[in-house]
Amino acid sequence: MTGGRRERKLLAVRSSLLAAGRELVEDDGSGSVSVEAIAERADVALGTFYNHFDSKAAYYDELNAVAKQGMFDTATKMLECTQPPHFELAAMCRRLCIRAMDEPELSSYGLSIGDNVLLESGPIDALHRAVIANGVSQGIFAPLDDVDLGVVMYRGAVRDALRHVMATAENPAPWKNVVYAALSLLGTAQDDISDAVTFAANLDRI
Amino acid sequence: MRGGTTKTASELNRRERRFLEVHNSLLDVGRDLIAELGEEDVTIKMVADDADVAQTTFYGHFESRDQFVQAVRERWIERVSAALMANVPHDAPPYIRVAAMTRSLLSVVETNSPGVRYGLMLLDARGAPEDPIDMLLDEMIEDGIRVGVFVNLRDRALGKAMLLGALRLGLGFALGRPQTVPEIGDQVVRHVLGVIGTPQALVDDAIEVGR
Image 1 (cartoon, rainbow over the protein chains, first blue to last red):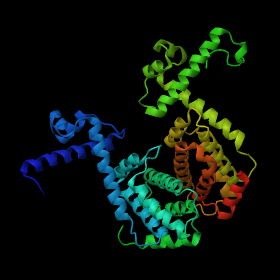
Image 2: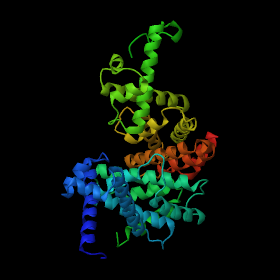
Image 3: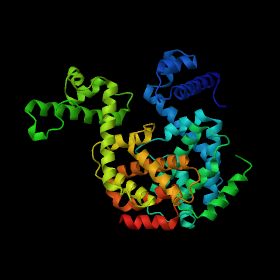
Image 4: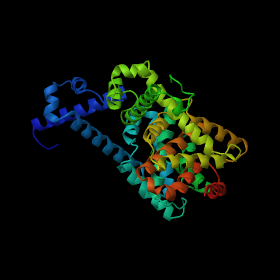
């Protein structure tokens, strides 16, 4: 930890403000909570909030940036990057499904950030893009005229699979069915899908 | 809708024509505001301001905000239903119908006509049992399972959810670059049919028929 006691204290307040916002957004679900409510939850004065952030908009920018970085870190950890592309995606699907069951609040917050009709491309897309492009060039996925379109539709399918899993609360999560549909979307051969499911099922580290 | 809706436009008198104009303009403005802000956050004042009428005029057309939001929704659903009725052949095999539905929605996006954004929002909102896309999909998936077309579909409800998720983001992608729709149309159909477990040969078949 760098800095003196005062800097550490400031950092702690800043992160408690960000944590308060995330909790409130999760509870509220509307994606926007008042500054007063955030300050109260973090147990600081309103003035303190504005010492840390110029405006509510600046606060939300940082909140989203932190959440995106968190999703990116999680996604990076979820990818092995040493396995064939269809194995990687199957493992990712299994992890996401299990996470959706175990931490529904966090997952739904992540999903709401991932939503964007205009599809500003995020870090998770970049990871998926690399894996999917790799699979296309190896002939495991069907040839794609537009890899970005494939990535986007794959993401839409997986995102709604997670919503479905959370809504039905089927335990254990039907992740194998998600893998079948997701890999079929990419035109993967049945035998390859079966291999990928077997690989994901035998993973120790989830 | 009040007034002589069964008359053609030329049979209406000036007053009736004006009433209809304002009515449609309120619905258009409301649709665009809802697409931008969501159903919850749109107020009657915003709608009246944007349509350039007094709030009392609004109440001459709609009883409440809820009734208005519902009217916007119904009008869009009617429009999509009509487009799907015209473009999706009833008697074709289910996978051909899924492809035709996808292409029909893509062509709406391609023309970038007013309301497309609203439509995408609605497609994502779900929970609307009268949604024509949802109903049509249920029917097509049911038929497909019965005749054994979607051989690799393991979970019907999950497959439908994933199809809708892929479709919505695919349409959103196309909306960002409508000029590319002729080039990417085949691929959208490929992914949509793939996610519900259609064998490759039938996917190729459906794409061939669509051309």
